[in-house]
Each structure stands twice: as structure tokens, then as C-alpha cells.
Image (cartoon, helix red, strand yellow):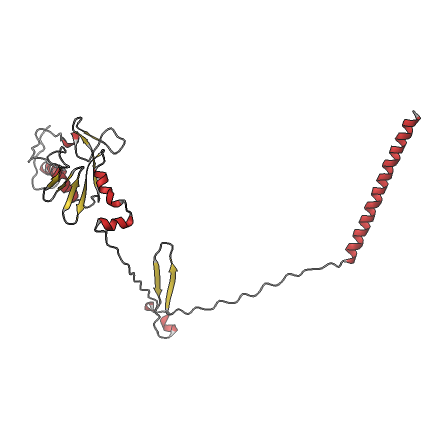
Length: 273
């Protein structure tokens, strides 16, 4: 029992001794730090005054100014040609003293005229038209030749629409007797595409393949769409055979004029249905 008490007393003494030594060490460190701070003088850093900016020089415009190449690849050259004038007090109130003349000079490229010229852009372009015409889902394509006019190309032949000449197999065979006339009219429209593509025609089902995800097709040739119809009252006279959209439009206009719905040469009472 006495041994345990003695051991506990020794632990307490050791702990107190460690605390006292730690306190003495901290006090010495604080005293040394205070002496170091007192010895070093306090330096006050004054801000460096900002330099006075130099006033910009007034640029004198004259001579030829070359601008850099723009991001679009166009080189722009600007030329300023000052003309001596009268006194500044007079020139400042004269509107003609400040005139800006702009002149644009541009070289307009000419379109490619041959397959070899197209091949410089892309070597695969010369194979585009023959490849389209041979595709199983395409019936024919129409392009315009500078020398031959509109030409219809098929898998094994072509048809010249202006002369009617057929070389090889007729690409319009099976697309109706008015196909050539329809395409000649289409070629004369102001916004006809450079390449007109018509889908393939199945003579067994008498249907065409639609390029869009629809249940039918419109605006092309082949199949049931070659047999349109116009429903009108039986008492309305038809002036002639209606072949093509132009003929139908003229007939509709004549009906409007005849029955007084549009100003025209003839006006009469509209018959009953």
C-alpha cells in the first residue's frame, strides 16, 4: 500500500516539474521575441507615384493604309487621299468637306464548266451523277448541259429534252406520256435545282419510293400520281384538255372571270351545282 502511494506521489511531482519547465521555456521564448521586435526598426513603405501618362499624338491621315488580312480570308486595302482645302473656319461648316467615297473591287469567280474542273474541288464529284443515276432507289436525274440543254440520265441511257433524242434506254419509260413535257416546263422555272432527282418506279405495284417518311409521295413522276383528277360542278364548262398545272390554273381563272369572282372579259351568272 505504501509503495502505491509513493509511486503516485512521484508521478505528481514529475507532472508538476514538466509543467514548470514548459512555462519557463515559454517565458524565455516570449522575452527573446520581444527583444528582437524592439531592435528592428519599423519600415514604412510609401507608395510609388503612378507615372503621368503621355498624351497621345494626333495621327496625321495620309498616304496608303494597308489593313491586315481579315478572319474571312478577304484582303482589304484602304487608301486615304486628303485634298488641300480652305481655312478651317470655313471648311468646318461646309458639308462637302467631309465626304467618304467607298469603292469595292471584287473578282467574281466563274462557275466550273467541265468535269475536270469539278474534280479539282473533290476527286469524287465526277462520279456523283453516274452514281446517282445507277442507284436502285432512283428512277432518273435531270441536269442542264450548256450545249445540249436539259438532259435526263438513267441507269442505261439518257434523253435530251430539247431535241427528243434518246440514247440507250429511255430513262422516262414508264413515267407517263407527258413526262418529257412536264420536265421541259420544270426546267424553265426560275428556281429549278441544279440536279433534279426522281425516285424509282415499280411497274408491278405501280408505286414510287418516297424520299421522306410519309405514306405517299407528291410532286414527282411515276405511279398513281401521274393520273390526277379535278372535281368541279358538271355545269361548269371545261374549255379544253387540262394537261399540266398551267392549264389547270388558266381554267380556274376563266371560271372566276366567267362567274364574276374576278374581273375579266366575260361575266355571267354562276350556274347552280
